[in-house]
Length: 569
Image 1 (cartoon, one colour):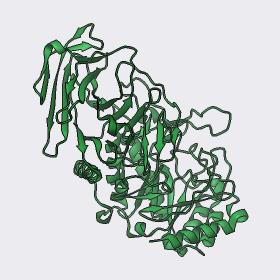
Image 2 (image 1 turned 180 degrees about the vertical axis):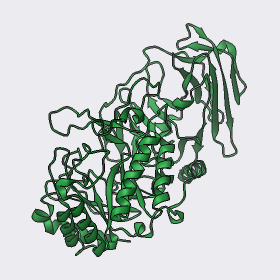
Image 3 (image 1 turned 180 degrees about the horizontal axis):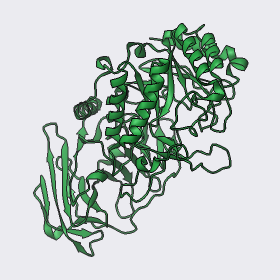
Image 4 (image 1 turned 90 degrees about the vertical axis):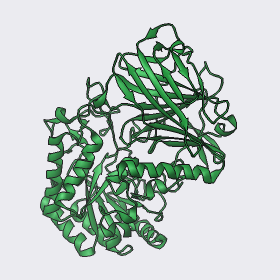
C-alpha cells in the first residue's frame, strides 16, 4: 500500500542544496477573515504570543476577552465567542501556561462547551524569525533538510497516521538546529494530533498551530488536552536533550522497550542480511512466481547469502493479491497446498525464514460478508472510511471492492487470528507480515490501536516465537511490532535515527523495484528503480523477485546479494 501513505501535501521541502515544491495534494481551507483572537504572552519567550480555539461538533470558538483573565501562568475564561468576535457562546476555558524547571513552557487546555468537543488548538505567533526562517524538521526528516512553509504552501503534519499531509511519526518538531525551538505533545493515549504552519493574510508572519483531538469514542462536553511543550534550546546538544526527554515520555506512556531488551522477536531477526520479496499473484491474476519457482530462487540466492540470514517475504501467496483478502490459504495458481509445502521444506533445508503476508485491515466485501460490522467508521459514525483504492486493472479509476476493517472489532480479529494460526501451525512458517498495520482511524466503535495490541497478544499466545512484522510505524506502534517495513528513504538517513531504531528493526518496503525494469510485482506502484543495497544501523534491504528476475538478471541479483553480505557490520 502507498497511495495515501506516500502523499506529500503542499509543502516546500528544503535541503542545503535546493527547495523542492511537493505540490498541493490537499485542499487548503483557510479563514477568509481575521478570527480576532485575544493573544497572550508566551512565558519565557519575549515577544511570542499564544491563543486558543475550541472545536465542537457544531462550530469553532475563541475566548471572549471580556470574560477572561491571564495572570502570566493561568488563563481563566468564563465565556466563548464565535470567531471574528461578532457573537458570544456558552462555554469556559482554563489554560495552564507555566514554565517547567527545564525552561520549557507547558500548556494544558481544559474546555467546556454546550456541544460535544472535538478538539482544541494552541496557536503561536511572533516566534523568533531568526530561528523559524530556516523551516521545521521532525526526527524522521532527512539530515540537513527542513520544511519551509510559504504563503501558498502550508506545512501539515498528522499523527499517528498520514491520512492527510505529511506523516508525524511522533509529535515532536523543531525549528533550527541550535539555537532551536522544539515543540512536543506528551500524551498517554494514542489519539489524533496535528501540526500546522502557515502565513495567513490576517497575521504578519508565520502562525504555528498544534491541534489535539478527543477520541471519537470519548467525545463529551468537556475535554482536557495533553501537555503541549515549547522549549527554546540554546544549542544543538540542548535540542538533542529535548528530543531525548520526548523519547523518555513515549517509553513511559506506551511501554517502548529498546531492541536489545525486547522479548517479542526471535534471535535470528537481528542477524538478517536481506529480505527477499518473492512476488506471487497480482490482483489481475498474473503469476510472477509459483511456489516451486520461489524454491528455486531460494536455492540460487543462498549461493550469495547464508540461508539463516535471509528472510523470504511472500506477498500474493494467497492468490490474487488484495482481491483474495481476507481469505488466506496457498493460492491454487501458484501450486496450492502441496506446492506451498514444498516451498516450506526447501526453505527449511536452506535455513531460510519464511514470512507470508496477511492484511491487518483489508477485505474484499464480496469475500467477507460481515465487513460492515468491522469497517472503519468516520468519527461521527455517519459513514464508512475508505482508504486505499488502487487502480489494479488500469481502467484509470480505483477499485471499490476493498474496505478496511478494524482489528478492534472482536469477530474480525478472531477470524484473522484463526487463519494466521492455522497457516503457522500447519506449515511451520517463522514470520507473519501484517499489511497496512500503521493505518489509524478515529473509529468511534473500536479502538484500533488496542485492536492491534490484542491481535498481536493473541497470536503470540498461540505461537510465542512467531515474528510479527508490520508495515509502517508511529511511536506507540513500536511497542507492538518489533520489525516494520519502512516508507523512509534509508539512503538519505533521518536526522534522529533513534526513532525508530532504538526500538525496532526496519525492512525494505514492498514497493521496491526488481532488477531490470524496476517491476514492483504485486504492488500498485507498478515500477520503481531498484534501491542500492544498504545493510546497516538496523535496516535490512529488500530485493524483489518477479517473473523474469532470475532468468534475465541473475548476475545483478547475485551481485546485489554479495554486496549486502559485505556491508554487514
